[in-house]
Amino acid sequence: MKKEPDEKIEAAFHLSKNLYRLSCRLRQRIFLFEPFNFQYPSNQLFSYQYAVTLIKNRQLGKAMEVLNRVIRQNNKKLPQIIALCYYRKGEIFFKKNKYKSAVEMYSPVSQGYQGARFCRFCRAECCLLL
Image (cartoon, rainbow, N blue to C red; front, top):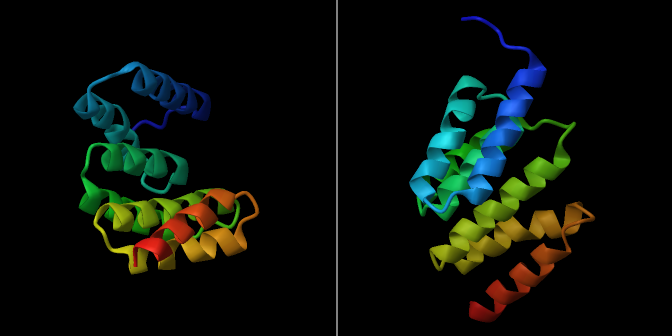
């Protein structure tokens, strides 16, 4: 397989994100990110964006698999992506009315990542629903 330059890959990814924002059809959005996810499975940013698209398309099980893969990769250079994966997992559990599991996902994010004030709110909301 021919290797593409990083600039070309990054440009294609950002083009896909822009098309994603403009597109109203959720299925089309998945097709924009799916190739990046499969061609570059170790790229956490591509995988995370694909998972977000799956969540919006209500493919929660598949999204959970992608998020778990990103977390397992445990890239120390991108702690924000790992934190966001836990947040999205909490979001999935919340949508499934599994509030206790959601709290378990939100808690490490709100405690370990400075920019995660939003997780404290989500965790509090889950606690009220328990």
